[in-house]
Amino acid sequence: MAELFISRKSPRKKYEWEDGSLIELLLKQQEQDSRVKNEKINVPAKKYVMVVPCYNEEEVIDLFANALTSIMDEVKPEVDLRVLFVNDGSRDKTLEKMENINLLDSRFGYISFSRNFGKEAAMLAGLTEAYESGADYVGVMDVDMQDPPHMILDMVDMLEKEDNVYDCVAVRRTTRDGEPPIRSFFARKFYKIMNKISNTNMEDGARDFRIMSREMTKAILDIKDKCRFSKGIFGYVGYNIHWLDYENVERAAGVTKWSFYKLSLYALDGITAFTESPLRTASLFAGFYGCLQFALYIYQIVHSIVQKSFSLLLLFGSEYLTRSVLFVVLAVAGLYMVRIAKETKDRPNYVIAKRNLPQ
Image (cartoon, rainbow, N blue to C red; front, side):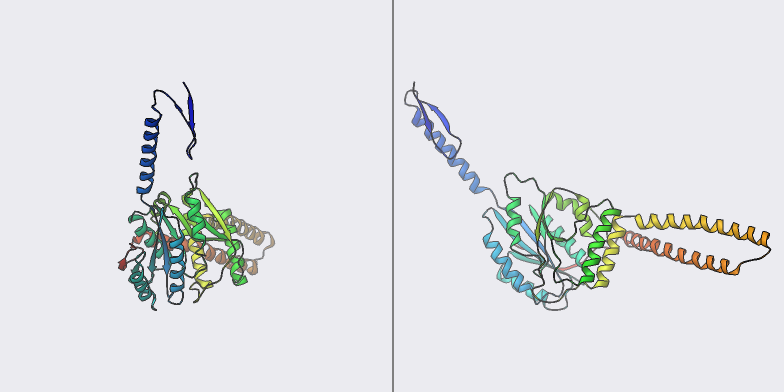
């Protein structure tokens, strides 16, 4: 009995030569290989949807659409990439341009709010629509080209690896070139402080630009906060995240909608959403000062009895200091009370006036 080895791309197989049955074995193997190949061909492409919030972005949206069209044509055949614009109550021709882009290429869809609800609401609406459309992976990116579109290819390649263990591929900046120095300074301090006083990890330089698995997207949508802080929510839900680094890119056109004042308010939302440390600190400080003030009053009474004199300066000084401490404590408590009021109203985060989802 002879032995014959057949060399193939698949692992080498060993066949036995018995009564001319080799031909039958080869035919069965060929039929099996053909069936496996057909099964691979018939496997539906994985659906990727990129959510893109827009507010008064008529100057840059066409540039973005052209860039994403090229990316769509370059992705692997087994990847079905779509884009979902979210018009956040723009007052310029952003919605009109979205409609025109959709007419030219149905892979671009859009939803439009009845008014401006903010970027957080736009991201939430986009994630919800993409998830409900059955997307396997959902991404978020800005339209201003500060999130380099070509990085989508690297992100998709990472997620499509056979040995992929990541639920999310996200992007972070290694530099802040082109950004106002004072803004960069406070941004770095914010992340540093938040990582110390909260239990949620927030990467310095992290962008909203990321692609997430369906499971991670659902975990994010399960968080029903009314005052949302997505950078904290991304860290809160956890999951395995792979970070891609890049150098800061400036806007391709238009102007930023984030003033220093708006960023400050956004930072306060993040603080009240993910840590109670300021409230605890204010309470402890008020308690400590209360004890100190009580001791001061005892000292003042004893001093007035022994010395037979009364210090008005000490009295008024302690009163002014007491009021200052009370105002600080009330201000900190007020931030959390405002958040509680917003959460208990249970109003919808957004209202959709028009939708035309990508096909």
